Length: 180
Image (tube, rainbow, N blue to C red):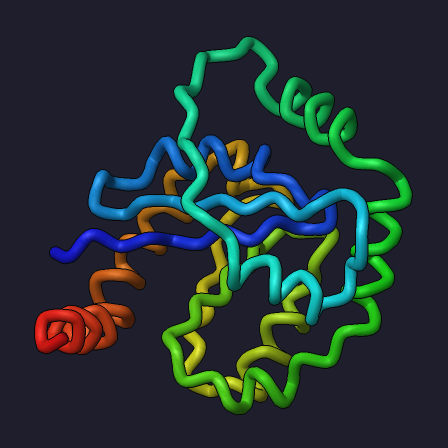
């Protein structure tokens, strides 16, 4: 299997903190690239898209067992995120219309929902699938922060997605790179 870089985009908090348990469960063949958005500056989706496009590989830290990992992660997140930054991203998210971009999307897309998520309703995934029919939707057990509290099922779905849905794209990219 070809090594794959998995870009992890944060939620409204704009940090990578809640991805740490998931990253610890991914196999060595999947290199996570967790991004953190700048706290200051424009929060519009075009600005964040430009930020993501130009992002460089970030170091992956070593995880230490913590007695109360979620509380520690929340404390760290809120110490790094200003209310202004959070409000800016929330306004941008509420005003974003990605339907046209999803319609044009040719890349494999994995849309993950959680069956007990009380923050992001399943209708959001339904909307994505309406505009990007090839998006693969997976519903996992758990609430909004299940990727933090129980990252195993999500890691397994990502591995399956990379090995099945992304494999043809990765082969074509490898062949194109070899011919250059």
